[in-house]
Amino acid sequence: MTTPDNSPDKLPQHLAVVMDGNGRWAKKRFMPRTAGHKAGVNATRKLVAACAARGIPVLTVFAFSSENWNRPEQEVSTLMSLFVTTLSSEISKLHKQNVQVRFIGDRTRFDECLQKGIMDAEQLTRNNTGLVFNIAANYGGRWDIVNAARQLLQKHSGESVTEERFAQYLQTPDLPDVDLFIRTGGEQRISNFLIWQSAYAELYFTDTLWPDFDEQSLHQALDWYAERERRFGKTSKQIQQEQQNKQAS
Ligand code: IPE
Ligand code: IPE
Ligand code: MG
Image 1: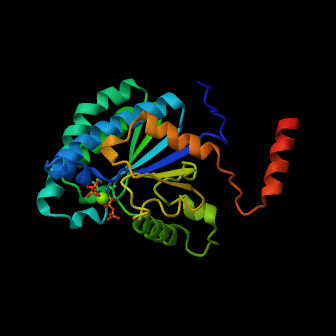
Image 2: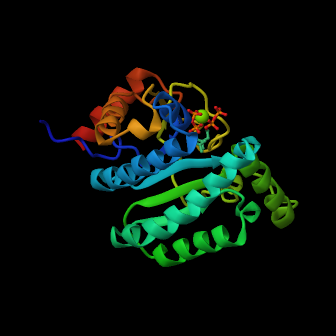
Image 3: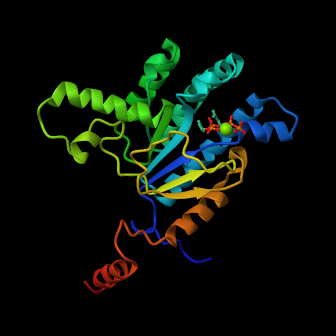
């Protein structure tokens, strides 16, 4: 086996994952959708460990979208309890792994118990220096942008609006843009996840259902990413020249 290339231009500095397919995973096994969500938690735990082991600095996962409130009440309430129990059972392990846990999204809609769990988790792990594990809960990309615009208007009325200043009001002010965006479950859509932050992300879609996504699946996605030529509007020739100059210096 060759050693993976972990240089910053080969390894995503920010990985975003739409963990989709829990319901279908359960359906295939004649189990309730909830069983799929529980199995999904195990896959997420493995993902965090695999990202930390690989040296990925930032991981953002889509746990619950602002549109997911429209699911049947029973499923929503099961998901909410799963968040609470998972947070309390996992947080000390994450802390021991030096993981910094953060949440993005509008947490005010969650009940008090979950809001407290979120606050405590962030507080406990805030000085950790390992993987930044960002959990998007009640998150929507449009909400993020409108929320940023609202704050910018309140605080900076009259000043010129630049992309940099605007981004400071998003949920991710200190994080790099998304380099690699993975969606499991076969759908090829963004579903309102990190739409600003993923403007230039490489998009990776796999049919694997989220509970089946393992370390090997992650490595496959990372190998695919390492082969991309990211041009950011330039030509291929310019990019190759830049690489040669970098190697020569
Ligand atoms: C993703 O899996 C998890 C959440 C949205 C919370 P789904 O529940 O969307 O699974 P499918 O897409 O129905 O299979
Ligand atoms: C996206 O999955 C949200 C999460 C994974 C949390 P959905 O299953 O809700 O997405 P759509 O509605 O099929 O696009
Ligand atoms: Mg889905």
